[in-house]
Amino acid sequence: MLKLQNSTGGNGNETRTFGIRAACRDGRTGCGRHASGFPDKIIDGDSFTLCEGRACKEVHLCGIRAPSDGEEGFQESSDALMTILGGNLIKCTQVGGGTPCDEKGKSTDGEAIVATCHIGSHDIAEDMAKHGFACDQVSMSGGRYSGEGLGKPCDTQQSALKPAE
Image (tube, rainbow, N blue to C red; front, side, top):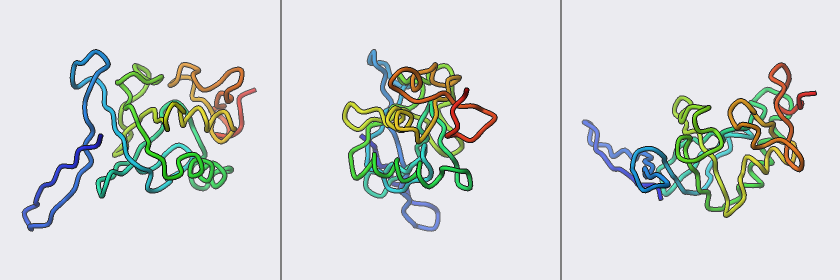
C-alpha cells in the first residue's frame, strides 16, 4: 500500500508525497518496492499516474515501448491503456523487486518509477503487447512480452508499434 507522508514547508503549506513500501520476496527490506493505487491520468501507452488519495506518482511500465505523443499510434495506445486500467486497483512492483526488467533496467526514469504492474493476475504490459498497442523491449524484458501468443519485439529504428521483421 502507498504510504502518504505529510510535511509542512517553510511557508506553512502542506505537501503530500508518494511513498512506496520497500519489501523483498525473502523478507529483507530495501531491495524491491511495491505500490498499489488507482490510475489517475494516462500519459501514453506505457505510462500513467498511480494515486492513493491525493498522493500520486508517474509509473512507466517496464519492458514495453508504446508510441509517445506525436508518434503514430499514440492515441490508440493511450486509449487502450485507459481501457485496460479502467478504475481498477493497480499493484506495481518496481524494477529490482522481482520484475522481468531486474538487472537490465533502471528503477526510475526521471521522476517516474519503472515497474511491472498488475490488475489481479493480469500483467498490464503483457496485455498491451499482446493486443499490439506496445512492443516488447527485449533488451529490458528478456523477451517476456514477445513470442507465441504474445506481442512483437520492438524495431528500434521504427515506430513503437512497427514490429521487428
